[in-house]
Length: 524
Ligand SMILES: Cc1cc2nc3c(=O)[nH]c(=O)nc-3n(C[C@H](O)[C@H](O)[C@H](O)COP(=O)(O)OP(=O)(O)OC[C@H]3O[C@@H](n4cnc5c(N)ncnc54)[C@H](O)[C@@H]3O)c2cc1C
Image 1 (cartoon, rainbow, N blue to C red):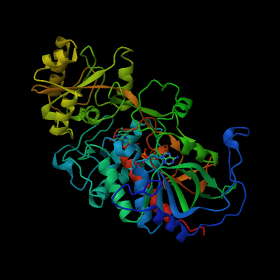
Image 2: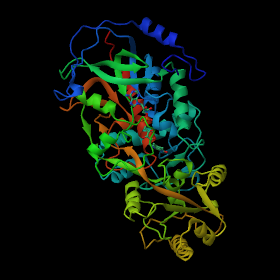
Image 3: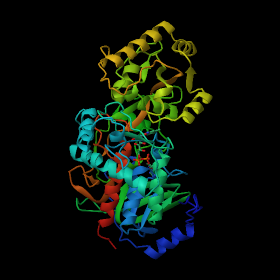
Image 4: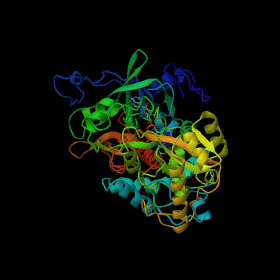
């Protein structure tokens, strides 16, 4: 992996010279003149006539925008099929939201068969797909959901077998899922998988170039059969034109940090909301793709993560516990010590149940005990580190915990005792939570609490694609030579993404896009 000056970012040691040499070897191809397609409104700054470059500065077979799960998986597959592949990443480090992600991955099975071995009930790709569509209020495109649900287990095993990713020996049942299918990374963050994918991609010859901001998509002309030819890129002070001899793959992630785009589609998500995303999660690649004819869908479906750190919006390791806990009996309480939602509900329901408690209700808390930690994919080291940082509050009794949280002790005790009884009786008359046999009553300490509040998190909408990850134009035609995968694409998750479904989505569609792109005919 290299920065824009070719400085090696890792021990893979790819120098600028080798990148340039690669470009020369591949040929700096001269282009016929002419104007590129640009659908921006006449008179707007963006409508400045974009002239196709007279020559290309570099040529690759497959050019990928973005170095998260989707871009890395695409690079690995395209390079594995023999294509010369480059990933362009605008940030100074690789990995996007993927590398800071919580590391939870939904798949009906893995090579270790934890669900079956722990006797946690049945599951199948069909059940996974059906939960996903229900969780998205049936706005999901079923043919895309199928790619994710069927691709999840092979994707997880691929990263384990070829990339060396490691997962913890349990599975959890998270909000909106009807089965125990969420796997946790040993590292506790998405880096476990981005490193695995990076290793596979680089081993197969793909290159990652950092500090390379894509500033335009070159498409030949307005003819529906006209192909995407390459990209304009800013690297330091230089502007380069990079040719994609076979295809361009957009894997540029969501736009949660793009306040203008966010508000244009979902005015409810005002600027004062915190955001879990990295600063580069902006929507310019969607705008450039739209400018050359790409269609979008469901751009207003933007998700809040219900359990972010209340003051900063950061989704740190402690913020993953409330997500992983419901299947093992974690309890969410308000500042008054009362439950306010069925903890197995979807993210949108949990987020708005908190917001609807009122302006002064921040934060709410998740309460769990030591016996739940390993089962819900946590670790004792993480809990100790969280306590040391003050993110987890620990106490030996529920009364002491209430005292530390400054919430009414009587009410918290009543709430916890009632919930313990519901576990015993297998019924939750307050919120109708589906109780399961593996839920653990909060009877024995030490007890823990973690503060939580919603923050803007995930874009379910984006570019319109088909199951081959080809981008579709506003007239429903495939745009030749243009693919999209991961959060930049819309339609997989409908109105609300189920937690832990993004990694299988990004990796499965990345693999599809990379495999298809490598099969395209060369345009030389
Ligand atoms: C904190 C956090 C925790 C999460 N935890 C989980 C989890 O545990 N499980 C789960 O399933 N999902 C989780 N998600 C969601 C999931 O991580 C994302 O949906 C996923 O990482 C998106 O991957 P991607 O490859 O599509 O995009 P990204 O990983 O965001 O990568 C896109 C890259 O493209 C780059 N880029 C954008 N525009 C340009 C441009 N013009 N030129 C060059 N580069 C560009 C960006 O800088 C970025 O590096 C989490 C999200 C966050 C933010």
